[in-house]
Amino acid sequence: MEPLQHPDNLHLRAALGWLELGNHLEANEELEHITDELRVHPDVLEVCWQINSAAKKWEACIAIAEAIVKLTSDQSAGWIHRSFSLHELKRTEEAYDLLLPAREKFPDQWVIPYNLACYTAQLGKIEECAQWFDIAMTMDEMTVKEAAMDDPDLEPLWKSRWGARWKHK
Image (tube, rainbow, N blue to C red; front, side, top):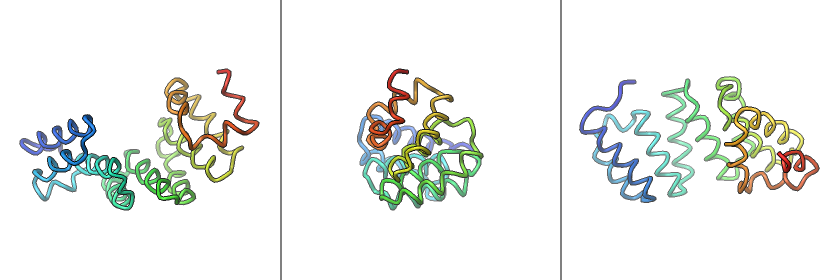
């Protein structure tokens, strides 16, 4: 899909700026200025997902992520967003099931095995969680450590016999 043109690209960048400042309401206002037919552009949908995520509107996030997957199935963001949104709605098994095919489709994305580790931890599948976490660690150890430090979804892993494996790394 072609990049947004002036002035729509300016409104999109302004929306991103508002999100960086922590103001999802102003970000949404900026998106309102984008040409109607371009509001289904993948870049606009991505920002729309971020706005709805900041507002914790998870049902809307699922619908937006579904649209992103349909428009850009060759990119990982929609897949990751859809499962994250489902998980936030306590539909973790569904989140896992829908993200699992993305692992083969996007083998270079550490966040996919990381999220699969989070979901399996929450589902009580600690051994599988440890396996996914190992995969994520081999892909980008520093980033994964930073993400995992305060992630409550991984708490069951840290409390298990598997958790000691990473505490010394």
